Image 1 (cartoon, one colour):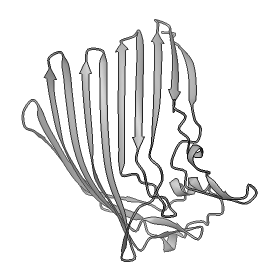
Image 2 (tube, one colour):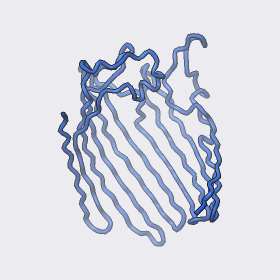
Image 3 (cartoon, helix red, strand yellow):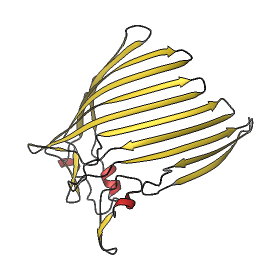
Image 4 (cartoon, one colour):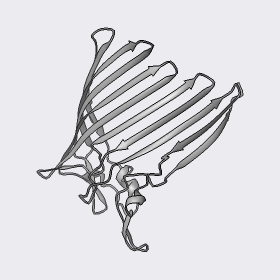
Length: 251
């Protein structure tokens, strides 16, 4: 049995400024279905020993400040969030078996979001800083495959029930890999165009327009093709992806 208290509060200072604070406890039962297993293709992973494995338990807190105001014919919204989480007894994969790590994880950071709306045009800019550490066996190290810096930019222009076009870009900073080396930072771009009529919509969606692929700057495996040892996958592999669709509206 787990007791999971949680508390949240909303503070409204005036018509422009608000703030939220919250915190609580959580848990996750041991399971094979996670990112690590998926990366391994669920191959050669031993069943979890329920009697010898504890649930992961977490404690976290967050708080933000939000500012909203009109600027002429535009509307500005700025949100600044801070967060902290500690996870006790996290599951780790050792010799093809999931066990509880001898320690805990901590994740702390901040997220900044800015949105500017001007009639049918909307601009969005976001930045996330995440510092995740493994506190195992008396040693403190950075958690692999967790980039500290992420930046996102979105813009969209929409005439309701007629036309929509959007553009997005994402930057993922360098991150520590499982072998202790540092992965490369990269930027991806995407776009969406949609035309709407009364009974018909047509759209075209494009992802990774600049063809950012991890295989462009390094091989994703070492050894031979018949006996490969795969490196961490932390960047896109598919390259440019374009899909289109038609939606028929009966009503």
